[in-house]
Image (cartoon, rainbow, N blue to C red):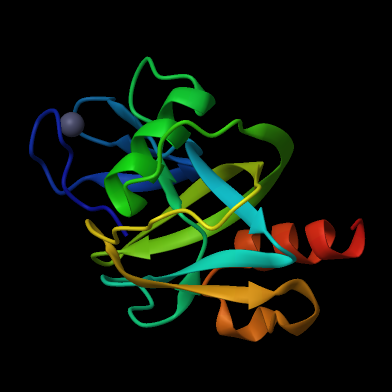
Length: 166
Ligand SMILES: [Zn+2]
């Protein structure tokens, strides 16, 4: 819960709507709009690639590679940047798959995101160099994906749709 106004500093913020706070001292409105994020379902030889989370929240759980979209970026640019940063993966062709809402608790603030999920099909297993917020990767047979091992509702829903639709 936000309390102090980021404009005037008074502890007068009150909840105004599902996604906004208003300051009773200066009238400022603080919006907590839905943030855009990207994720990739990378498939190769009947397996999908899962990353192991290196950081909070849900450290150690499985995830899809991806992250938040920076200001001015397209979803495709964000995906290329994140997959390069996290996996050292370049030169792939992302195909739009779908969008999935998510809730992302971070440092005691709950962020709402919309995850833009892309599918990436590779003919052969790439060399992966995990870094950034990725501790490692696992290639999991599509028939053996356990959704409960994945950290986020958006990722579980996207993987479920992807596996179900073949
Ligand atoms: Zn204020």
